[in-house]
Length: 69
Image (cartoon, rainbow, N blue to C red):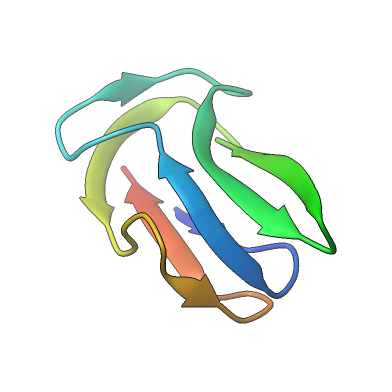
């Protein structure tokens, strides 16, 4: 399951790494958009398979931030 960016922004902080277990609602990354910090959360529980962004990256709407299996 892909975790997608809800809007264009800059990654302030990545909260998980590959192999981490997450529950639905856990923070995956903190995204800065329109001068506000927005947590992007796991849509479902599982194990983080891949993190596709790092701190400081700029992302577009619906960019894949992480993959949960």
